[in-house]
Image (cartoon, rainbow, N blue to C red; front, side, top):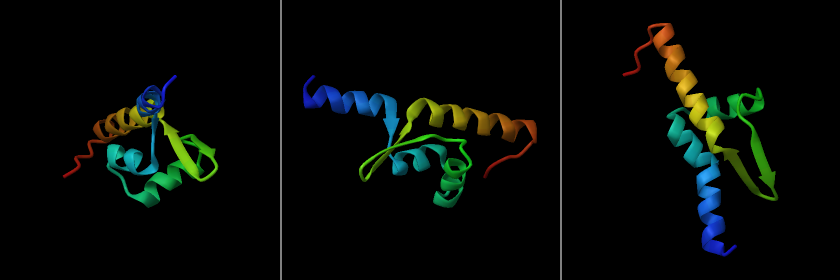
Length: 75
């Protein structure tokens, strides 16, 4: 595999901390609370930390469902 293909694969399956926080539209504190409680898995290799894209996407769906369930409307 070439570098370009590897980068595309990483982008397809993983998110950085910043990308995950922006995607979920939550604070850093809330995000790291989810990670420390095991709600979101992380992969660490040296100084790089990545998160599974599918877990982040599922977390967003779950959060939206919970907001609807409890009639919470975000403004």
